[in-house]
Image (tube, rainbow, N blue to C red; front, side):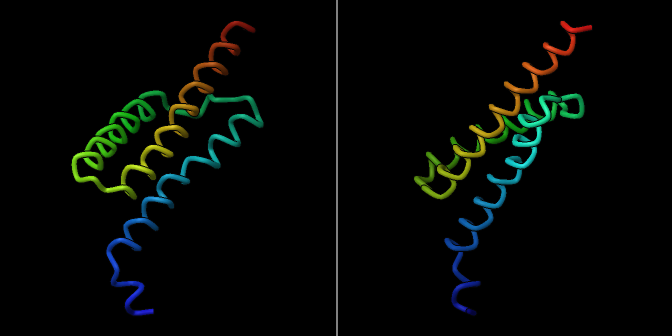
Length: 95
């Protein structure tokens, strides 16, 4: 167990996977409820910009775990932004 916890590749990959999946529950909740009032567009835009920089960094370093986890995270956050815009637009149109 000590070798497992001292392996930077394993720790980094685990951290990346957990971070990448962190917004998935929010996306699922948003799609199920079809509501996006509590989601900050500014936060999503800043987060997406940061993720893009992580992907670029991973490409420069040729670091596959950084690339893969951040590509998944980018996908989830772009979907969050898309559904946030969609549901906020639909709400505005219905009023």
